[in-house]
Image (cartoon, rainbow, N blue to C red):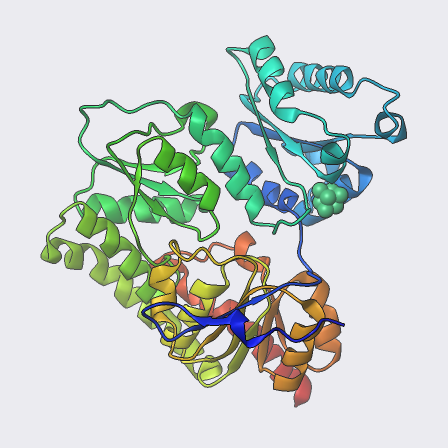
Length: 429
Ligand code: SF4
């Protein structure tokens, strides 16, 4: 049983009325391997080779839901007992696996070696393996590595680690070039195309996206780069970009009609877009988004929502639910709270919102049960027990697998939250 936290753990963030509480204890989260599910769809000529155990293989296989005969662009090089006992040379085996893979799949241009708990336990140096394999396979295939290990991480950190590994490899932009906008974070292609159109209508000609859809089209970066985060969990990627001279544009995240407008406006302001031009470019989308949100307002207004920490999207989602759908926030749990990247979001939360950073699972379950929220947003492992207790739940991972950013997805985002409430209401009739 976890002891109650001392009062000193509650701290209002300077300049705002949100209570931040830090909690430590047992956690219930997925590991960073999960990010492969959306990343392999995004970078169309990349392959993700997990160096891990059968457990890792099962996780990624079932999360992606892809049949093996569909030739997915991910696989697991299994570390077996002989490797764990140090009886086999894991590096030699890895080289053999990679050679066979590249022979069989010549379309692969970028190979990620993805570390796991087992590869970290045996201290397999995947960054060195990536260097060795990269020089052997150059110029056809680039090999990079990152960790998707589940030790002390959350599932969205896999994307952060992957993109951070890409940043040092990005070409340098011309030192004399005019400022360019870089949108950072994996977005569904349809969402990326919508944003590209909106930026173009605002007059921003040079807009790039990280990651690009193909390995050979990764964006250039340098002192001229102003970057806009599309996801709130990219702390390492942002740091790596700043080390390359790029500068972050502070903004909330593009969730909901308001979030999307504020996100676009932050970019427009950074590039000196005239207010009339911004209005002309965004007004039709904003109108569509508001219209799409309206049918869900009735279902979500006044509903009491509890967030367990899982995806790191919790704070922007809570802001969307409270400001645009008039839901009531009981507790907003998040695995990590990047005070800088989330400052604009936190400032928009209602006065007195309780944000919990980290997790002590038993304590949080107790608080959730006591509060009996109308809707609980949580990880897969918690959803079934809470549903069995009569609570409506939404899997937070679904919000990563579904396009939810931008004006034309605002209605879908609201519908994702309204659906469990409608389902429960039907069950209770
Ligand atoms: Fe593999 Fe560790 Fe993730 Fe389990 S938590 S699937 S062992 S990387």
